[in-house]
Length: 249
Image 1 (cartoon, helix red, strand yellow):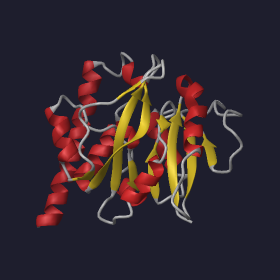
Image 2 (cartoon, one colour; image 1 turned 90 degrees about the vertical axis):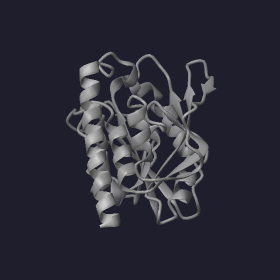
Image 3 (tube, one colour; image 1 turned 180 degrees about the vertical axis):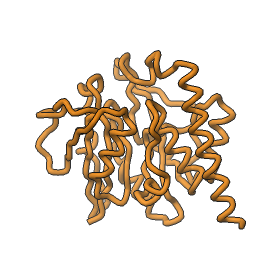
Image 4 (cartoon, helix red, strand yellow; image 1 turned 90 degrees about the horizontal axis):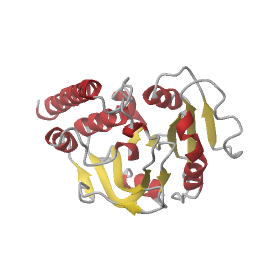
């Protein structure tokens, strides 16, 4: 039975939203024969997840030394069995049909990863979209990287929606060892290395709340932000150049 492995890192501020993330996952309708597993990984080893989630054999919790979201994601990956790996942050919510659309796009062997439209979810329950979405269809290598470089390191897609073939994820070295933006680093590396696909139907609700990491002062410190962006860009450029060498000789 083919499996799509959903990976979610958790730290204390995001814990109150985890049940809603589970409910959105449990409501997914997958293509015939498919199943999902949810690798929920505490960033730390404090027992944070004890008794939090329903008893569901598809939910596999874990913990380990604290190292940030990238480390937590990688430790979760070590326990995953799926050929497809789907990202889902603890405070976000999957839209109906999201996993089925990822699976459908990746049935094409020419497609190695997907991303999708996102709606921001505000505390009052209202939602709003963004204007940077690509059109539905394949994303050519380098397209996201060039947009990101031209637009002050802002991606046209949300990295937290990534679904990627396990083989490519491992080839890329997984999520970067950074305190933040590790998911941006991965999706730009994937874009530099292989053809992706953008699903124009909303696949995730991106929660806006006071405690989210991307709104913190540390996340937006200029010196650290520029250091993260430098490494993300350099890795993607190297991978794009290597792909060109393999393609054109």
